[in-house]
Length: 366
Ligand SMILES: *Cc1c(COP(=O)(O)O)cnc(C)c1O
Image (cartoon, rainbow, N blue to C red; front, top):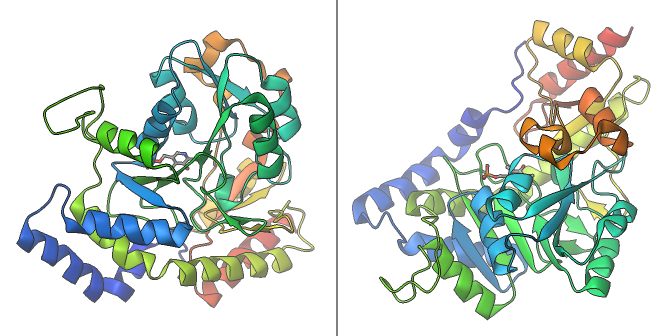
């Protein structure tokens, strides 16, 4: 049996009529740039997340970049983030001439360790950027407290965490800005690149809106140097359709996670830890084992999709050598990079497929 890590074709088949209708509608009205579907989707997404404003942008990376600009991040500033994340979390900091300060993670949740965040704060720190990794929220009370005490802004990298909750609060609504990615493999995925920023402040919203369109306000008058980072009308139309199914898909992912957690009870792998106050949306179901590389080979042989998120922490990336970090500075991130493996968790996974994944992994350890 073949089980891919993610099967988007299956998802499309189920909602094909609605998606096709939405796409054809845009093809016919031809308002490809900033068509009515963009604002429609922004309003729906803001309501879904429980924030006042949502701003559609071209990618999750641009969402982070524009949110950091709205925090006033510039050359000489420091931004604290997790060393165990996708590269975008760090790249956007550097692109503004600021310095990423990479902090270690917790070994259960793979999220930022707040004690380490506290130690990393100094008078150059402008923003803390927690990453809600794999779909579970970071330790936000502690992070917001550190930020509040030091007059630092908070940008949530919620790229993997749409609809995730922390003590009843929705990912992206706790910091000053929440950034989302609609990269196809995210829980809410576009048919290409797309992203979004949510916030509650009208003035910041206006500023970010102009940055999204070359910093123009009004058109052809530029007070700032911005970007070409609008959300495509076609993507917005597709996302609106998919948003209606998001909760149902998340629930299916969570059911798969419960199934795996139970099935792996007697298998020597570390399963994801969902903290009691969290509502994890399982963008990834990530296990850990010392035999990770051998297990991966075994899964490949049995045609089960899997992937390593992430094989090299950000502090150890070639382009960040100049910052002078060593693996020895980190207790958990280098371990995570050696041992983690993400396995299929997507909502359309069948019972047979789930059983097969468990069988193949259990057999490996026997
Ligand atoms: C996907 C992702 C991003 C970037 O999103 P894009 O839409 O691909 O630009 C940023 N941060 C994290 C943690 C991500 O997983």
